[in-house]
Image (cartoon, rainbow, N blue to C red; front, side, top):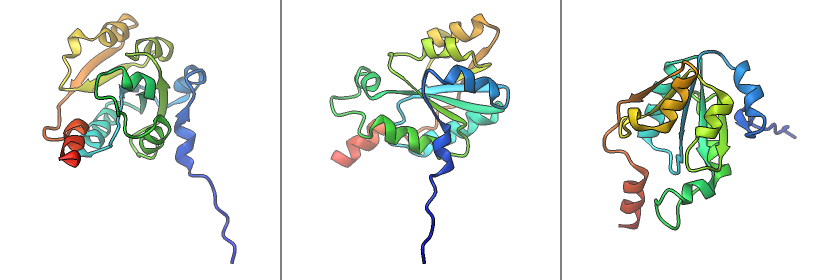
Length: 163
């Protein structure tokens, strides 16, 4: 018996940066945006992403490219998973509407192109000091920090594995 294999529909959530400004307005509103490396997805990540999604009609993730992630000082061998693999894992989550890579150190330029109504980060960031917050508030959007899920960190996971 021959069974037809179809591509997973979550791949439709992967979006080239050049295409994102046209795709974001078509998403259910309001659009919530967050960003990160999301190297080894864990409970803290998925809890945070579900909370972020609940704040709006859709959730867009700005994903640090491999080059961008290496510039964040997490270690010479990070990220452990490639940008393509990290993007696919995130896109497969129910809470995620769109995944867009960015190469810069911060997603400020991507935010300017996408203009979401809400920018969120984890509570381990001081939201009021971020350039991203000032950027989003410039066009009338808002920014907020979500409670940090204690005890979950990719860096600590990597350290434990290397133990």
